[in-house]
Image 1 (cartoon, rainbow, N blue to C red):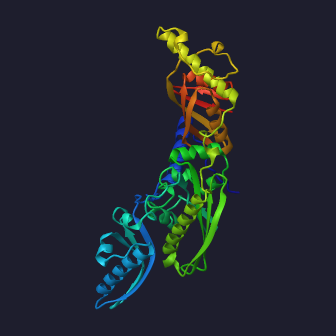
Image 2: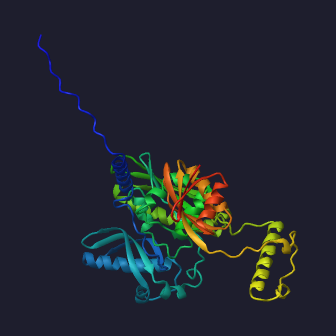
Image 3: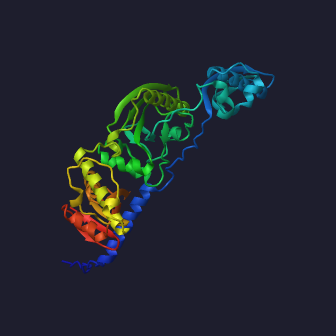
Amino acid sequence: MASILLPPPIAPRRVPLGLAAALLMATAGAIVWAQVSGDRGLAPVAASTDIEVHGVAVNTTGKTAEEARENGWREAQKLAWIKIGGPALADNQIAGMVSAIVIERERLGPHRYIATLGVVFDRTRAGPLLGGAQGQVQRSAPLLTLPVMITGGTQTMYEVRGPWQRAWAEFQGGGSAIDYVRPNGSGSDSLLLTYGQTARRSRTWWADILDQFGASDVIVPIARLRYAFPGGPIDGEFTARYGPDSRFLGSFKLHANSADGLQAMLDQAVRRFDAMFSQALAAGTLKPDPTLSTQNVELSPTVLALIEASRRAEAQEAALRAGEAPGAVATPATPATLDPATSPATPAQAISNFTVQVATPDSSAIDAALAALRSVPNTYGTSTSSVAVGGTSVMRVSYAGTLGELAAALRGRGWTVTQGANALAISR
């Protein structure tokens, strides 16, 4: 019986621990970079206060196709001026106030022009002739706008460039009563602003996001698209929601005969949403949620008395440092439950910014960390530099004190703290 010779076993290669960690970090970095790289963002158009009139239908003729189009554009200018209630003017006077013609849909023949156009009037020239109807518009508070598109069982916002995001980016809302805050969706926006974010109810989480974008509240226009077949008719169901609790505001339906009419349908939907939000603002429904801001919190009389006592103590301390008598400081008489003479005066400390790394296995851990940092005395502000659910998030803290004092305060609240150079790492 012939014997079979097997090759000697190959000993496993040992990879240094440091090299393995470096490879792991490089792989994780590549994954994160893949999530935020690519053509994702669409920069919104610059806001203008010009007066826009959409949906002006014309049907004109001419000796040539170009003449038919020119006649159609002149007709659209007159119809648009009548539509917004303008006084009787000559055609050349109306044309002198037009800053742009927007082609929404057109068909051009050898001697005929059929189109649906939009006409944009310069507000500076047209506004005085329109009276108060088109004058200064009372704007809303800045509202973070999160357009959600649902189609084929997938919910997207800024993960990819889509027609719904484009419709909102190209919307000219300068003359609207709503102050839209429209992210461009590039970089970390595609990770932070997702459909899942609209289902969050944490005021702490929402307040931090709104602070990053300079907004006071959030509105969520949702477009649900159903295709009869690829390239065929499209039914659109549109729903408006607002606030951190995703409250229902209204809904409507539109239809496109084919995929070629999708963008026009979405542009029309944006204008319908704008009218809906403006009506809700006028009715007092669309107003910032007071729970997202601490500016409207009412303090109890006891707390107010403590604050006033602290102010008087600080004034006396300043007078002593200036070489004046304590009685020379005049303070208004305010009822207090605390004797100001027994309130120790704390000398003012410089406010420093520190970096805090937090282990955040889930979204609730992020909320808990933000709440803990904001509850530390002498903390003047917190913000999230980066969010990593299931990893380590980075936060910035403005604190009136030293890094060691901040670390001690967090340890006193049950956190495990590791102190580094101008930074802390905390975990539960």
